[in-house]
Image (cartoon, rainbow, N blue to C red; front, top):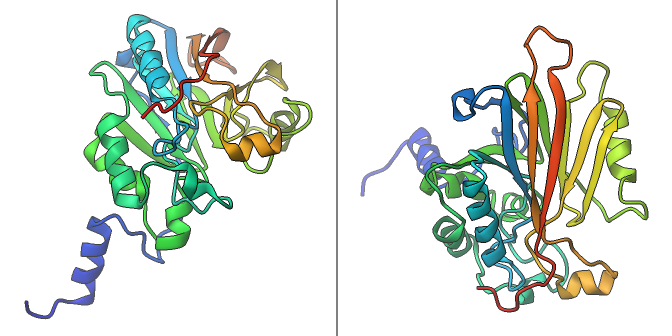
Length: 280
């Protein structure tokens, strides 16, 4: 094989999913959803988070059941709050022993083959700290690689992105740190820190594996979406019990010339209270 130029070598690395030093790890962007997916001004979306595929404690059967329910409810869009993958096994001490798929390529391929797939549903996804673990250790964009094999999953980047649905700004975020004593505390603080004029109408925050709903706080609807991973040994040591399930969010979009186009909303929690063992 002959010599190749630096540009050709960089192009090969990009094609294989590696992030180069010039490329930022996190770029917050706005993605517009095609409103032809919805009928009239009524909008119905699914919300999931923290699916952690590759973990021995994943709840894939329930995740698939939730997507089937979304199909029955005629939900064309699902928003994912981060950590679709369980990561490199080094996010916390002993994590690798909680995984049944180890390594970036095997775990990405497993997720591409097994994450729910329905013709009528597009999933909009951000990456969380577990998905980003390969960025830190190997410079690898795991989500970019995953979405090449799954055109029905749209990669919005890491940690935060805005999804514009008919002029309604839905901010997807993956939080950080541990669970606060009061479930709504961190969500309230995050809402308070949005600069004036930049608050979304709806805020969805993954990471903490628990549920909470703020029907309105400073004119923002706040949702903690739960997870699809049962209690791991790590969570047990922390004294934390996850909420397994997903949400259906329904709202009506007003005329675009209104200051706030959100006309009420209904939030439906679809729980799976009894975790499945060895769900892989």
